[in-house]
Image (cartoon, rainbow, N blue to C red; front, side):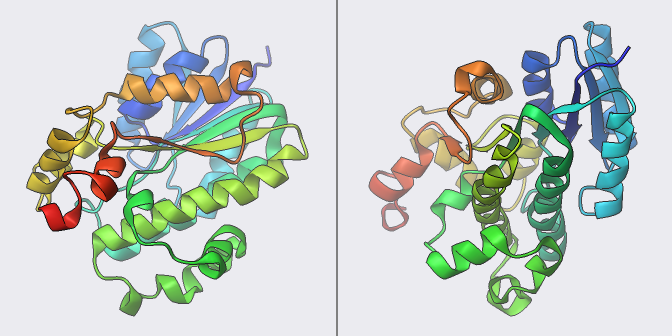
Length: 278
C-alpha cells in the first residue's frame, strides 16, 4: 500500500522529535552518513509504532541525495522533508562544514523541491549562529540565495582566505540556509508546498555535548546561563515549532526562519552577552 513519505536526513535527537510529531501513518526514510546511527534511531521509532527505514546518505553528495529520494519514492509520494543533518564547528574542518551544512542543504532543498507532492511541507534545521554574524549586504545575501548549487562554493565570500575559522564557516553556512529557504520557497510554492527553517540555540543533544566539551565549551555554557531563559533548550521544544510549520496550522508560513534560542541572540546584541560585556 502506498503511503505519504517523509524524507528525514540526519539521524539525531532533533530530527527524531520532529518525526514523532508528524510521522504517524506515513513511511519515514531516515538517511544518515553513519548507517549505524540511522539503524539505531529507526529501531527506536519502529519500536514505538512508526514505520521507519534506515538508509545510508551523505548530503554533501548530490548522488547520495538522489538515491535517498529514489528510495522514498518506492513507497509513495514525497510529502515532507525534515533536514536535521549537519556538522558543528567542533566536529569538522571548514571544508567539511561548507560541503555538508551549506552545499548539501542547498542541494537537498533543490532536489526535494522537484519531487515534493502538491501541498507538501518541509523544515530544515539551521542555527542561531546565522543570526549573530555581521550583516553581509544585499548582494551577498542574494548570491547565497540564488547562485546555482554547483557554483555556490565558488563564491568569493566562501573562499578559504575569507573564512576565519570553523565557527565563521558554520555561521556562513547557516546564513546561507536561511536565504536558500527563502528562494526555494518560491519554487516550492508553485506546487502549493511550503518550506521553512528553524534556527535553534543551545539544544541538549550529542552534538551540543561535543560543543560543551570542545574548545568553545565555556562560551556556550556562558551563553545559555546569561540568556533570558537561563537554560539550554530541548529537542521537543524545537519539535513544537516544527509541528506548527509542517501542519495546516502553519498554512500561511513559508520561506521563513524561526529563531528558537531562549533569547540568546537578543542578549548577544542588547544584554549581558554583548561582546564588550564579556
